[in-house]
Amino acid sequence: MPNTTPLDIPSLLRRIPLFSELSEADIQLVARYTRERQVARGEVLFQRGDLPHGFYFVVSGQVKLAFSSSQGTEKVVEIIGAMQSFGEAVMFMNHPYPVFAEALSETVLVHVGQAVVSELIDQDSTFARKLLAGMAIRLHGLIQDVETYSLRSSTQRVIGYLLQVADNDAPCEIALPTSKQVIASRLNLTPETLSRIFHDLSDAGLITVQGKRVSLHDPVRLSRYNA
Image 1 (cartoon, rainbow, N blue to C red):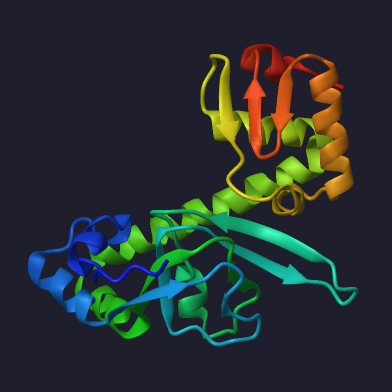
Image 2 (image 1 turned 180 degrees about the vertical axis):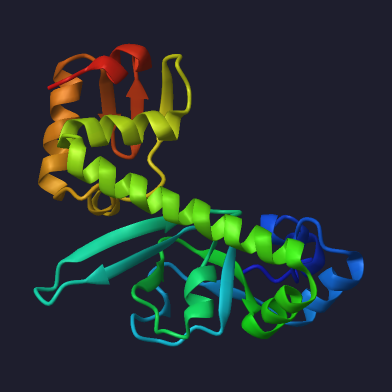
């Protein structure tokens, strides 16, 4: 169901790392250029080729960034969750979006207009450095993705993903944050390959899969598994 309670925009803006050190006056300024947006599962925020006019911050829900090939296959580039932002870099390039953004669940976001960010950059060099640092972290993450796809086997990619979601060395149960099809695309795998790897890890006694819930019986041994 849609949220009928208006968001406390200034409080949310303070939770965005980029704005965490702004003065109260600057927060109020940014708030005037910020708009709430609620989207249903499957709704597209923007298409590849659209021009950006700001960036987004996810309050709740999930958004996938992806592109489609000429053959119609889809490649998920990134999955954006709550308290994460996206679109900052493209906003300054004056280029169209290279991907499309689609809500994976009912999602609440805020959109921060480009004009106010440009104004803050002109006024505050510290703000500009934080913006550059945030984009550098995102770039580093994308480079790590390329390294993972190039140097790790399919099984190692899946194990790495499960351990990242679990973030725990003790036996635990995790809930996959999105569909197996989306996870497969994010890991540069086919859904059939992901299912086969889950089956192999289950046969090895390392995990148990029940729908979107995965039990990790021994994360330390799982991390050392090499098929």
